[in-house]
Amino acid sequence: MTKMTAYQHRITSIALLVAAAMPQGGVAFITPINPTHAVSSSLFASIGVFYGTSTGSTEEAARLISEQFGEDASEPIDVDEIKGSLAAKFAEYDSLIVGTPTWNTGADTERSGTGWDEIYYSEMKNLNIAGKKVAVFGLGDSVSYSENYADATGELHDVFESLGCKMIGYTSQEGYQHKESKSIRGDLFCGLLLDAVNEEELTEERVQNWVAKLIDEGILESSGEAAPAATVMPAAAAAPSPQIDLSATVAFEDHALAEEIMTEVKKTRSGYMAHYNPRTDKTMWISTDGRSSYVTVGVPGYE
Image (cartoon, rainbow, N blue to C red; front, side):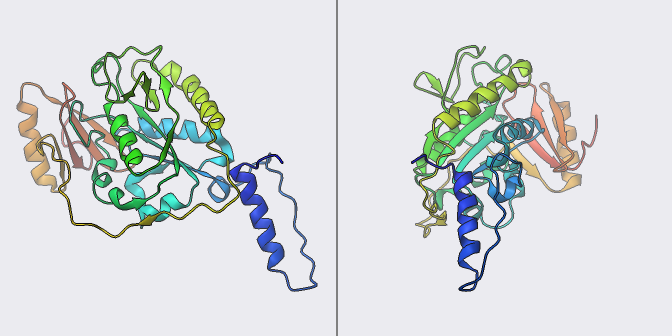
């Protein structure tokens, strides 16, 4: 018997539920659903696409990946905008594709500069999602930061791997300009790495090849059984989260304080560049050496 994809299995399950709900002796008129026809991706998606972003580039990559999967993948979901339980959101999907940029270059932990950093060692450490298929992707600058290319992708991978997830989607380093990366596992990248700064023309092809690889590795396959819900395990005694220099990444909610601090920052020899995200109404200030960043609420206070 040919194994159904997760999408086809969900279609069949819905049809059976409708038939079972009919009164005895009644007739259920069920219009056949052709899986080749477009339907709502949010209703039948078996893959959840999650990302963190500061400037929007990772969101664009997530959208390309989602579109390549069609109805089998969800619309891209920003981790900063998840309402309610993270466990419940992950439980909606059989498999996960997760992505991140890299801003806090060279830091040991919490290198993304996005919402991922806030949940890695708090909410996520108690998730029970062992066995779920997960693939990671990340963005970085392989020329200006060739020795720390897309480092944050490695941390994203390691967090999910530590939860017992089945990691898939490793890719070759061939064709990249980097020297070193914390996202290398063995001889391979731990997922899909993209460079929207120097190699944007290669992004679409790399996404297409990666999606084909994930399909070959079984990301769409379903056993025909309901996937176990992701649950939160009872919290053990609180362990200290990995510490980083708080001066490297600080979120300022007080506009007056933010402006005062950033005025001083502007006077420093290195200087900072402002990256405003209108969708989140936040500005990320990145040092010229890429090794520290600050986040302020609202548009940049000065140009």
